[in-house]
Length: 275
Figure 1 (cartoon, one colour):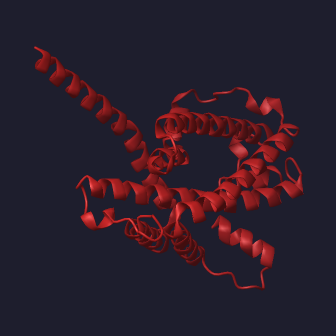
Figure 2: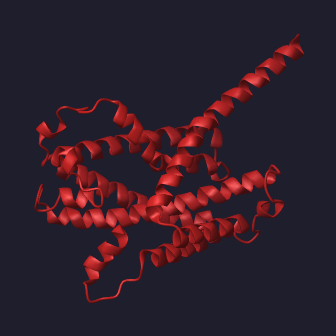
Figure 3: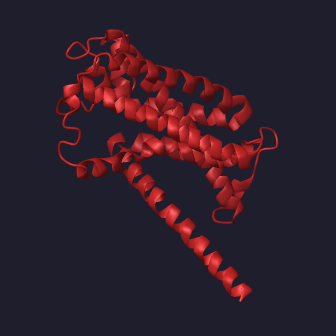
């Protein structure tokens, strides 16, 4: 895996580096323990610092990469039409899972009615701009047919193309930090979702208990951590990514449809009541 090969490159071939599944299980357990301690004490401080570092790394890579671009690599812009672009976009839905975390954190907001719309809109706009800029820079450095699917950015800034070795180090650490912050926000969001579903009676009531000491749903958080460890250890990551992308894509499609259906139903009921 990318994490295993990166660590092996830093420590050398003679040093034993455990399998990436062991790293995944340990990181999931540490993250779960951090979230069980509490949002104020754990997640806000750790995740805030890591996200700032990650965004700065992405901005630096975009800025340096823009100086190494070849505009002829971007023409034609849609060499096979828009169909393959739409089809491939279904495989990156998981990149937008973090915006649901903002909505699930409503209970921790000071003023949810004001803060949530601003946070969701701002984070969506910033991340989308970074995604687009990053993709343009990458395709401008390397012809899209030659992009290495295993390590595209490291290859782009390697000696074959941009030849900026120190950027590869930033890419390695940015990828590791990005994986951790994604796991942190995902576990946090999922536990709050279980808490809300339990309070509504959709799942076991035991998951609705909030720890009086830490002020967090410890039971829901431990369940999320256990599920993450099992998935990380027992399933190959490439199949997990496809499965999660399919699930997230279905959620993005059917959840708005369900919202509009319920809104129309309430409108019809109100009209019948008025009549």
